Each structure stands twice: as structure tokens, then as C-alpha cells.
Image (cartoon, rainbow, N blue to C red; front, side, top):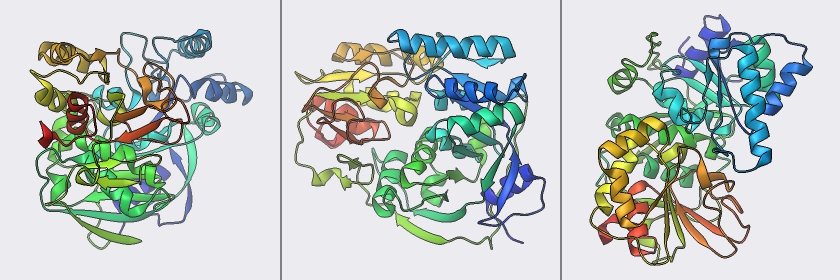
Length: 419
């Protein structure tokens, strides 16, 4: 029986020859993940189950990344609970301040996720790792608590939607624009509990940083997972990061898809998601100089080195517009160090930007960059729901790093061409 890449990974982890869409299966988990918001509840569930030891201390990752450095007593207590659990369980992959960064940036960076893996995280954007050809999905904290104890979970095999991106991206158009455009087509409920399989010549040309962005935002269409067939680009990315080699699955030519959607990209402009939904998407030419109070460059979608390079290349030699707060947060300590070496951080500082420590920052409206009533922000993050970055009467627009750079310099939402 022909299978998609997702079905092949699930079958392998269920110990079966094949699975098909709609089947309920029990699977082994290669990596269980939780952060400083979700881990405490998962740990409580683990304890309530009467478990004494995690299923495998090398296959658990605990990443404090939302409110670090700790912003208040409550967040300090959350991380303390994680730290003590990690010490008691001898969990190797607990990342202390100085080592930590955005969870969905540092785990691939550290070689903890490889092609063919099955990863479950207590965070909705765990689907990021599909960029490497892994099956990865978010679940609730109680589900992850049970996984900590057993190393297994159950899933319904998702039906797949095949997205075929045709042509080649133009200047300052990339993965963020492709996924925003796709969300505009599908809507936030257009792929509920489906697999989004990203294919086509346009995505074959994308670097890993852009693929991570696209897989990350699959959940914004309601998808269970987003996934790329791993290729030489993925192989080059994982080289030297792990002692494991991964498993490079491919969809069969006659695999069954619920839908196939062809998306031409040659004429695509940078895309912008307007308040208050990631699917409220317009090409940048349709916007009329929306004035801004803040621009945020970072998060698990666009806090990677390539994102900082693109923005810095446009900003170099220019100054942030008066009245604009320009916040830059590298996704990991490694990215921060490389950005310092390359002069990117200096470029942002000379332009009038503010650099934050590697973490989620203002993405979720919890730390460093909260919006006041009536303020407008352009963000490279993945969500712009009501109150997402602060006051419920603030507004968040989503775009790529090049648009973020141009907008910080002009003071309004602007195409990079404006520079």
C-alpha cells in the first residue's frame, strides 16, 4: 500500500508495516518536549501517575524559553520546578540560562531532532521539526506528562494535503511569505488535524531557516503537522550535529492525498497578515503605509541567523524611524554569538535597535516588548490574535524579516523596495 512520508514515519513508530488516514495507533516517541509554561503541569501529571523515572532521560528536553531571564516570582518558580525535576531525573537536555534559547530553534541546532523522528511537545509549534522530515506535533501538558512516564502516546493518522509551490521566489520573498499566502488560501481551520506536506521546486530551493518557518506555522491552519521530504539540504544541516544519522523517508508516488493545491510563486510579493488572524493576509502592495509603534525581529519563526542577516543587510547605515521601538532577539546563544562576530548586532544597535537575550520575548505578550492600548506592532512571529502581544486593543501585523527591517526604518509597514 502506498503511503505518505507522515504515514511511513507513524507506521515505523507503531511497529507496523502500514497505516492509513483515520486509523488510531499507539506510537513510540523519540523526543518529548516541554517549556517553562507547560512543563510544570506535565510534571504534575507525571507525579500523579505514580511514575518514578522518566522513560528515557536522554529523550526528554526541558527548555525554559518563554519568561527568561525570569521576569517575576511566578516565572522563577516555574523554572525552579523544571530545574529540580531535571536534576532528580538526571535529564541531560535541560537548558539553563546561558544555554537556553527558543525551544524550536535550539533543538534542531543541537541535533536533538533528525529526519524520521517522532517528536511530541507541550507546545503548539512543535510542528516546526517537520522541516527536517520528522513527524512532530504539539499536545497538551497532561499528554506529555503521560509520555514522560511511558515513552508512548496514541495518535489518529492524519489525512494529508499536498502543497505544490511552483516557480521561484523573487527578492525578499521566502518561506514566511509562502506560508502566510497558504494560510490566506486555507484559513485557520482549513487543515484541522491534517498533514500539510510542502513540495515543489520553489520549496526545494529554500534554505532550512525558511523551511523551519513554514513547518512552524502549519498549525496556524489547524494542521496536526507540517512536513518536508528531507533532501540534501536537510542532510547538510544535520551533518555534525548528532551521532545519529536519521531516517530519510519519502512519500510514494501514488500516495493518497485528501487534496493537492498548486501555488505559483513567481509573481508573489511579500505577504502581511493583518489583525487579528494569521489568515487575514494581503500582499504588501495592498497596504497603505500603516503607522507603527514597534517592530519585533525574532521568535521561533524568524529568529535564526539568516533572518538577522537579511534584516541587517537592509538596515546597515540607516537609523530606526523616530518613535519606533525596534526589538531584536536572536533565537539561541549560538546565533547571538555568530551575529556578534558578523557585526549584525552592532548594525542593529547603531540603527537604534534593542537586543534581547535568546528567548521568546514579546511573541506571546509575556515578556520584553508588551504593547499598550492602541499600539501597533509589526512582528516576525507566528500569531497576531487579539491581545497576543499585550493589550487587547493593540494590533499585531505579521511579516518576514525584510519587511520588518524596512518598517523599522520607515516607521510604517513598508516593502523592502521602499529603502
